[in-house]
Image 1 (cartoon, one colour):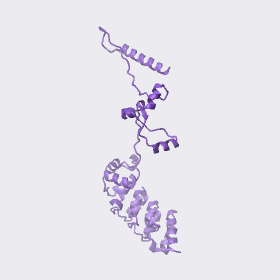
Image 2 (cartoon, one colour):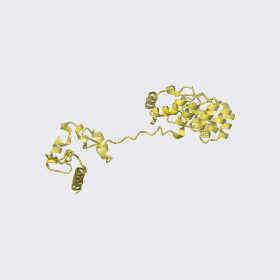
Image 3 (tube, one colour):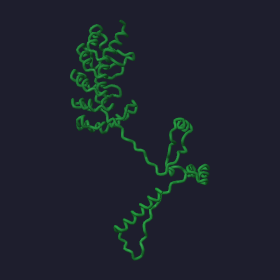
Image 4 (cartoon, helix red, strand yellow):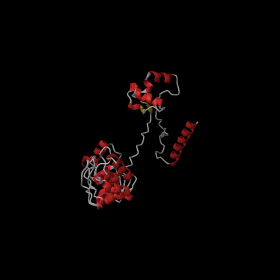
Length: 283
C-alpha cells in the first residue's frame, strides 16, 4: 500500500469516526501520526479529528503518541480548530491532555481568539474559564474578519459577555446580523443614475427599478422636469411624475371675542373633519 493510499485510508477513518481503524493505521504506520494526511499538506490526523469534533479519535491518537500541539501546513493547531468550530468536547479533551492554548497561529491568533473570530462563545467561555483571555480588541477582530471574509460576529458584545463570564446558555446569538430596515421614501422616483448594465440585468430578471427621494436629485434630473415627464404631465397620463404635495389640515379660525381655550368640543370638531376627509379620499 502506497503512502497516498495510507493517507487516504487514515482520512476516511477519521471522517467516519472509526477509532479501531485509526488505531490499526497508527500501529502499522506510526510515522503518519504527526504527518500531514491531506494532499495540500495543511491537515494532520489530530487537526482533522479536532475539526470534525471526534474526541474518541483524539484519544486514540494521543495514546499512540500524537503531538497535540503540532500544526500542519496551515499553522492552525488542533485546539484552534476545535475552538473555531465550537467543539466543546474536543476543547476539553485537548486541555486535559496538555494542549497549549497560548500558541499563536495565523494573524497571531490563539485558540480563544479563533473561537471569538468565528462567533463560538461556548468554546471561548471554556478557555476563559481555564484562565486564558483574548489577545485582540474588537476593532482588531473586525479588521481580521474583513481580511478573512468570515461571517458577521458582534465582537464588542461577545467580548463584554466573556469578560463578565456570562454563561453560554443565557447569552444572545452573537452571529445574527442586525436587521436593516428599509427607509420609507416620501416621494420616490426612479434613480436616473442607474447604469445601462444594471438596467439590462434588471429587465432580464424582471426586477423593479431603483428608487431615490425626489428632493435628493438636482432640479434638472427630477422626472417632472424632463421632456418625457413634461409631456406625461401635459397629457395627464396616469404615470405622470407629479411631485407629491403634503396636504395641510385646516384648523378652524378663532373669531374675535371667542374663547381661545381648546376644549373637548373643538377636539370633536377637528376629529369629525378628519373623518370626513378620510371618507372623501375613499370615495
